[in-house]
Image (cartoon, rainbow, N blue to C red; front, side, top):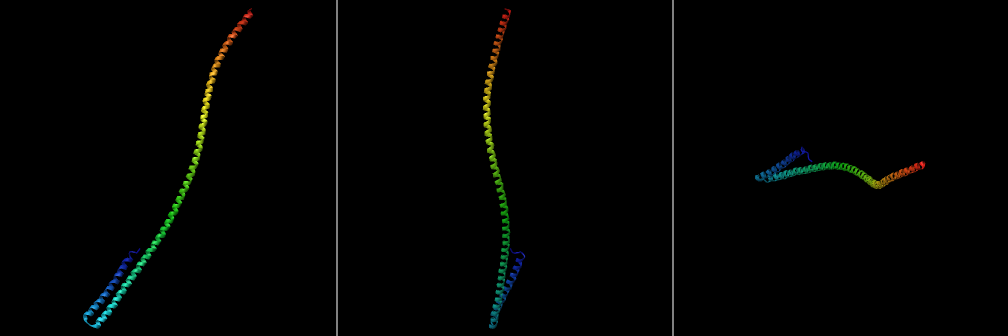
Length: 193
């Protein structure tokens, strides 16, 4: 997680240091080459010493650049690790919040399901009771229909007997009329006699 502004500066600084190291090596090489061409032992020795010193300086500059680049990379990695840690902490907190919210929703759903199961059980009990009552009422209705059929049969029989009784009463009334007429006739004939 490097910032865009630090990257170009670091690259320019690294390039400047490396250019200086390369220039020092070139100067040392030119000094040694010039001393070799001069043919003087003293100039060659001084040029060789100067080449070693300039090479050492270039190596030191390169080493310093490499060490600084490594430290900068380590700082970048540490900063990136901190950013990932912070991101992980935030995501862990979000996950915990999500888990709590999900658990709460699941708990609410489970309570709703439990309530619905209780309601369903109560409704099944009511349905069973209603079915029993329906069966009992159907039995009572069947008994009532049988009783109505029996009463209808008895009523028909009673009406038939009543009709026969009416006919019999009419016959008896006629016989009574005949007997009364005969008695009245006998009384009249006895009074006349």
